[in-house]
Image: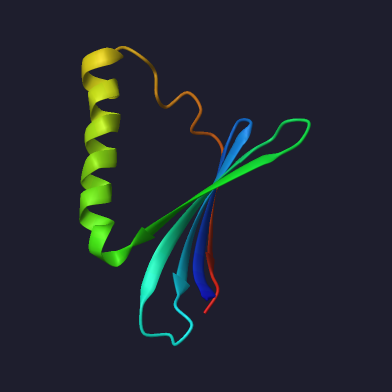
Length: 92
């Protein structure tokens, strides 16, 4: 499994890393989302998203985020924490 591309998002006590990886024989690709929570002992969680699920995953994530932003907290300032840079790293 080879990492081809990576995006790191720093968000307060959390870091989200989106990695594009290739299978061992390089004929397929998938995305790994890693969340690292900075505490006394850092915690790491991972989700693997396979190409056949990309559209459904994105649709579900977008729907959930939009529900919070539009229905539950429409007056919240979501851009107040946007000052952290996003790091893109093409590895191939």
